[in-house]
Length: 199
Image (cartoon, rainbow, N blue to C red; front, side, top):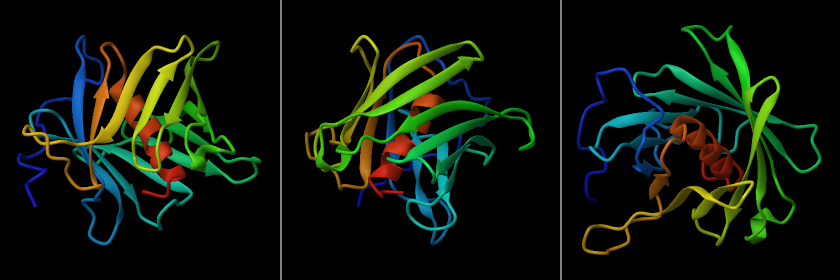
């Protein structure tokens, strides 16, 4: 199998917004031995995100971390909701005590059959929210995130080599449109993979 992690983690402070389209490689493997999760690389091959689920696949708490292991989002499954609900709490500072609700994703009843969207609400502040849909097109890991007006925000699909060869099911490409918080988008993609029992 070809290398999917050719370089060491980024040493400079990360920036989660850029003015251009960004492409990431998602390897559906955890850096933790015998753990569930995935590792995300930027277009230069640097590790930018780690996702670790220390319990079991589709657990009730998953951590989205940067390359150094700093928790960016704690994603919790809420069991009392009828169709399934996940909440992502953004972590500020170095400790868990400063957490703020960043997004909430509700599962559609027909999602597992494909085509039906999840609904995501993103909190910008106490009075302002954004609404996104996470659309699943097939039984594979392919999905699109669109905004309220139908504009594409991000897309995840199986990665192809430069010669057009589709790589294994555990290697994906995530393309994030300009001026988007790709850390937040990664959080939504994590929830999508939790729904699909991939993490």
